[in-house]
Image 1 (tube, rainbow, N blue to C red):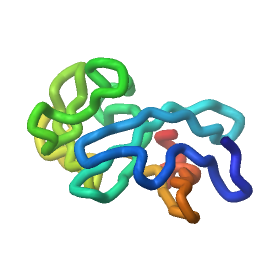
Image 2 (cartoon, rainbow, N blue to C red):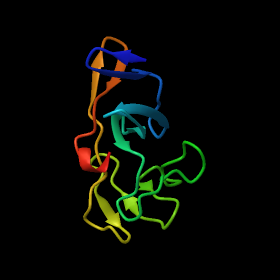
Image 3 (tube, one colour):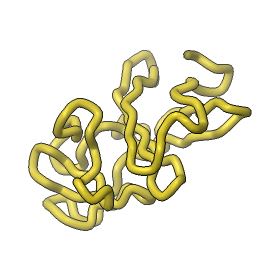
Image 4 (cartoon, one colour):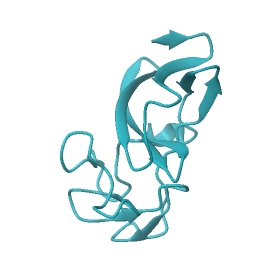
Length: 121
């Protein structure tokens, strides 16, 4: 749902810790697939594109985390990213960072804004 400064993508208590949700943002006239993760009770969002090969990362639709919920995992080649920072800590793009999608909370709504790394959006 469009919002004056971003797009409403969820309600505050919609995602429990360890859950993820895909959403689409309109950026410069293009639809960009993104995802949100509740990691240790905090919400983080990224563009759904691995930094090694520009492919979506979910291994099953809307499944981004390792079984133990510790890392975001790229289904294509197994790169592991820190959920809180988006930094790759294992795999070919080690040290690179996922394009972050800033989130704000207004009342009960979670609002996503244009990705911070526009070149990768």
